[in-house]
Structure formats: structure tokens, C-alpha cells
Image (cartoon, rainbow, N blue to C red; front, side):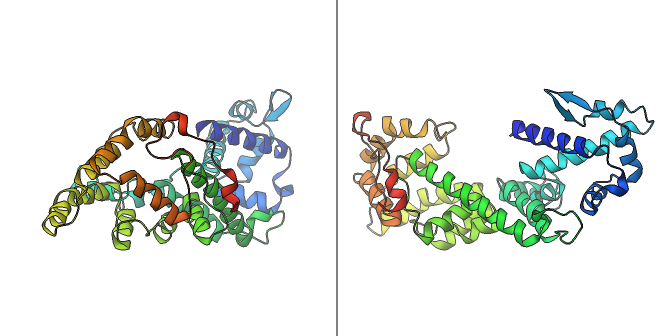
Length: 339
């Protein structure tokens, strides 16, 4: 993440170096407006005009050293503004929570250690990125400055929104398919509306609103339970799992139903144990002992896993639950296009 931001920042420095010799009144209306929004005015740009460009590998960069070399007494102040401009733009390119996001994530800045503050942090856990998508990209889209002289295509709110949706959808589709294969499943058929709704939610372009609206409510849990877990965070989900594991199984036992308490307990412990769910280790750990443990505690558990995959997405496993290393095959990539 930091490497991507550094790369984008260097690209910004190159872009500013190309504009460095342009007088303020010769900049496009778009450039002047964009710079002014970041606190860089005509006087500041005059200092930048005097900068001594830094060269690296035959390319020009507007670096802090380049601005300092101008010798202008306001150079340090201008450096601060330019670095703030570059840093803020880099956090659009590689999304990072801003002050608005942090305020929303703490319910207006509720103090840590207080009841309300801790409740806010538990409820909003892992929601910083989707909120940042709203406060950064959605806000920039809605505040688009189309019509300014020199404005790029992406300044148009419709074009910005379309690009954001397509990018989120494409990246979400790749991430969703990668998760399926990491879990030992063949890719999902991409010719269904269900796949693309999941891909859109996975991409994060719609923020946490998309996560809630497009959450998968076809699992064993009720729709209300699934949505509650999405809205209230993982801590609520863990508490709900403990409730299901204890009182839920007691109620099933009293009703004469098969509780599967052992398998549910094993799944709960695994879900809350550090490191065992790391993407590069999960499949090996599962096939080494977790699948066998769950099958022993609840006979038929692995068969139900495969049936659920076929029911939800028509999927098969390239590495069946409980199968040995010798029994695996290559993922069926043709399944992604319905073959």
C-alpha cells in the first residue's frame, strides 16, 4: 500500500514539474481551481515558478528540495502545501481514511475507553475503507467541476461514477473468484446476476451501503441475522455465534433436533484463532486436520459443504473437503464462463 502511494506521489511530482514554468494566469481554469482547493494560490505558485527542478533517471520532479532551492523566504510554507496536496491525492489513489471517516468511525469522536466510545469502535470495526469510499470518491463525484476550461473527462460526475463502478466491479470480480479458488472451489459462473452483485459488493465501490444491501442472505442464517452481523460488526457476530453455540444448541436438543454442537464449536474456535485463516495457509490447514475433525464431530458435514456450494453457485471443488493432496486437481477455469 505504501509503495503504491509513493509511486503515485512520484507521478504527481512529475506532473507538477511539467507545469512548473507555466505562469498562474496561463494555467487552465481546471488546474487553478484544483490547486486553490488545496490552499495553493497565485503567490504560492510564484514560488513554485522559481523552483530548481530535481532530476532522477532523466526525469524531472518537483520535490521539496526543488522548491527550497528557489531561495524564496516562503519556500517552507509552499513545500508544506504542496506535500499536503500530493499526500491527499495519493490517498484518493490508494484509499485511506480521512478525518471525516475517522469521525464517522468513532460516532463523532467518542472518546476511547468510555462505554459509547468502545461501542462505536466495535460497531464500526473494519468499516473505515467502505466509509472512506463514500467520503472521498463519492463526494468527489458529486462535487464534480465539469465545464471548467481544461477539465479532464473524469471531472464529469457521470464519467467519474461510471469509471468507479466499472473499476470496483472488475476488481471485485477478480477478488471474489480468487477467494473461491483459495477455498478449494472452482470459479463461479460469471453469467449470473448473483455473481455480479457479489462482485460489486466485494469491490467496495458502493461503500458499506453496498455491503449491507448486497450481502448474501442465502446462507443458513436468517436474512435479518446476516444483515445485523454486517451492520453491527464482527464483535456482534462473535457474540451471536456464542449464543447459537450455547442456548441455540440447547433449544435444538430440547426440540429433539440434531445439534451438531461439536462441529459448530470447532468452527467457532477456528474462526477466532489467529493465523489459521490466512489465505496462503487456510487450505493446507483445513485439509490437514480441520476437515477431518469437523466430519468426526458431525458426520456428513463435508458432504453438506459440497451440497451448499452446488446449491448456491453450481460449484464443484477442485480440492474436495477432506481430500488428500494426491486427490486434488487443477481448478476448472472454464466454469467461470459456464463451461
